[in-house]
Structure formats: structure tokens, C-alpha cells
Length: 386
Picture (cartoon, rainbow, N blue to C red):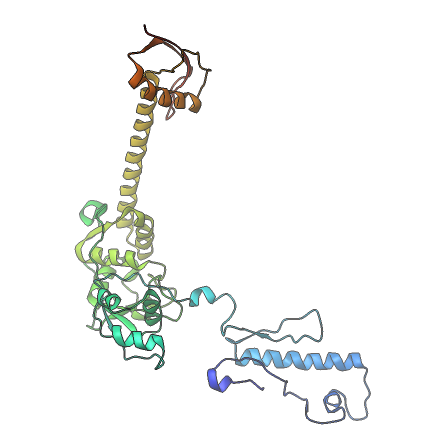
């Protein structure tokens, strides 16, 4: 098969002619004669069907040889349209979201290391890389000119490696201790416990081509010892696309590493759902129950406080003195409209109480119920004081 520039860039751009049984450079009907036997005369329709069959055979062969670049043949509405399916981006349809470069959520204190400059000489990226490649921390790299797109590109292609991941909690809003939820203290043996070299782990903020992030082996082993589902997991599984942490955000992975070392889950409340899901996947059911129980208590306290605030607000609105200048009887209002009358008129009263006097008739339209303030009907008549 003729594949343009495949040897140069590894991408099938376009093929000109199937080289199956045709002779494209033979004059005087050389192409058509290949589809009929010697002395045989076939119709144009039969010749077209035979040529289409040969074309389909070539499309299948292309798909078998280059499955990542050429898809299976698809029938077309017009016979003149070829049935071969090329992937224009160099990968099967639907994998684009998995191949996009993602900016890793690195902290300023994370320690990093750069490989020798792989960028094209003379380009802007080459000049920037020369400046920040000597950085030892993320904060230093940013100070030397590294941009977010540089962190995403360099980490995705392996030019940037994390040598030490910071695990100190950024928030102590929620804390779950092992002693409070019954997590065993004794660490169990794990499949990755032997050795000193860092171990690669895949987290959520990684594209399909990412090779994983290097993490201290002992730290990951301590975490695996507390999680039954991770004790028998090998190094290859941790970096696989369906690995145990493949759907865990990097910030949540830091929280788990800190928990494995210190026995305390400390996190911001916005990470509650992600922490609970990661613990369940890891098999740490006791810790997951502790996280859920803590969230349940927080929701109950918030609900009780909101209910008390609504009840207090309803009582205050019913007892606020109401005034209206001009001595006119206002229209009856209920519900939210009555509340607005109370709030607006009460501000007028504070400065005019000495010059105006009168009475207010309050009628309850709906008594207070669970979580709902009562609705009043207000009748006001005021006259100036001489």
C-alpha cells in the first residue's frame, strides 16, 4: 500500500491508489482489464462491483496493519466515495479527551527535577526551558518563567518529574482519626514494600500518555498497608490507566498519603465526597464510614442552625414597629410582600416616632409551621402628633 510520509512522521495522511490487482500506469484500459478474465466482457456495473470489492479488501488490510491510524471500512452512500476511514488526528475517535494535556495541581513546595532541554533550538519554548530547567521547586520554576502550559506539557512528556510530593494538609476543617473510627494501627505487608526506589503512581490529572508520578515507595507502602484492596497491588497496576488512584485527584492523593503516615484524615469539606470515594475504592471501609459520619453531623448542625435562623427572623418581623408617613391606610399585603412592608417602614419609623402616632392591626393569615415563618396581614393608620 502507498502511504504518504508514513516513514517520516508515522502518520497515515492519504493513500493514492490501491496496489492490489490494478495497473494504474498501463494505458488503454489497463485498470479495467484487471477485473475481467481473458476474453471475458462484463458490464460497467459488474466491473464497478468488482472494483469496490477490491477496494474494500484494501481498506480492511489498511485497518489491520494500522489499527491506531485507520478505522474499519464504512459503507458510503455514493459508490464513488472510498470506504476507508482515516483518523485525522492520529488516534481513534473518542480518545481526544484522554489525550489532552492537563495542568497538574502542584504546590509551590513540591520538589521537582527537569531533564536536558528537548525543545527545538531557536524557539520560544527552548529559551524558556533553558531558564527554568535549573529549578528545584515549583515556586522556583514559576519565578524563572515557567507557565501553566509548560507544567502541563513537560509533565505529560516526562521532561518534568516530581522528586518529593508535599503531603501536609492545607486545611483542618474536617478531621477523622483512626482511633475514633476503628482503623487497625498495625501496618500489613504489601506487594510494593520491598525496595528503596520511588514508585510510579497514576492520578486523575494525567493524560493517557503519562507515565505516572514518582512517589516515595515507603510512603505509598504505608498507605497500602492500611487499605486491604491495595496490599496485593503491584507496581504495574498503580500506573495503569485503570489503577486504584486513576480517578483520584492529586490533592486527595496527598490527603491519603498523610493519613497513611499520621493516622489522621485532615481535609477541606469540599473534598469530602472525593475522599470518601477514594477510601471505598482502597477498601478502607472503617475510615470511609468515619468520613460519612462526620459529614452527616455537619449537615445536621447546618440544618438546625438554618432552621433556628428562619424561626428567629419570622418572630422579629412580626414584632417590629411599622410606620407609614402621610396618615394613609396602606393596602393589605401577605407573605413576602408583607415582609417588605415591615422592613421598609421600620426604617422610616426610627426617625419619625416623635412626630407620628397611631396603631397597627396584625392578623395572622398562616401560623408558623416546620421551617416556615408565619404570614401576617398588616393594617396601619397613622396621624401626625400636635
